[in-house]
Image 1 (tube, rainbow, N blue to C red):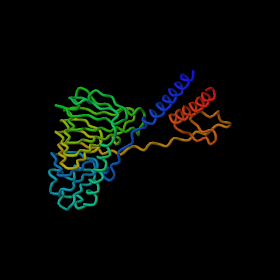
Image 2 (cartoon, one colour; image 1 turned 60 degrees about the vertical axis):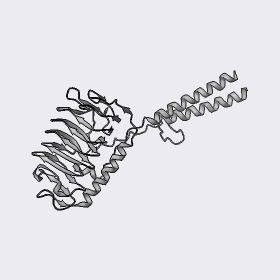
Image 3 (cartoon, helix red, strand yellow; image 1 turned 180 degrees about the horizontal axis):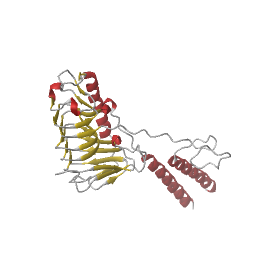
Image 4 (cartoon, rainbow, N blue to C red; image 1 turned 180 degrees about the vertical axis):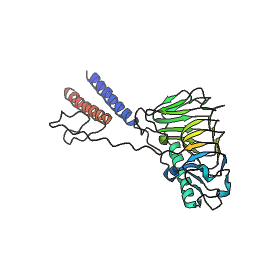
Length: 308
């Protein structure tokens, strides 16, 4: 009887701790801060080239390479400002602003390392079209190299926010990222492009007429093969960004309205296990379960000792 009682206590303790820890691990994925890089639709390290006409909503910046490494891009194609580390950028651009673009590259590096350091919730097996046909909720997703493309035209990738406009999606590419021609990344149920991040260890290639969503944080280069549409930004740390009749909309997150507090009825109902009776301070349910389990085990242990 004593053995059974002690065994029961141990089982209850394990169950309580498991439930509590599982609840803690399910915390929502937090966003990746881009810092000053957030104001750029396009940011390159080595060069920025363009086959006209592209349509870019947002700023464009190049660092640490000189402004002479812009090729083919005009101010008429950019709704924002074209920045460089010196005054040799495209005609009519803002020109010399090394502090801004160097700072943006520094913040891009910080964001890249942040995204790369997240623990994946799902890891896809390397191979063709491993992202195609998937409907994914908020989380961190790792994937590897594809022989032809990580995403094909026949099977869109759908990002589902499940009604939460703050849902964050982080993708970690251990190699390159390649989308096939006419491939699609689409958002549903309140998902926002500003909350999607692609950390790419190598380079990115967007197939002709790709429809892409999110902020690309590439270690090396980013290339559009032609006429792609990007809702987000193309940010390259070390290499070039090659535009080709590309449409880029650098969208900011929509402000989520603050919910109106619901008046507490008087007298209130009996406090639930997830509320501290003496103060009315709410605590997470998983913490309440964990504490309740430990409290219950302590009582059972005390009773068992008396009987023993």
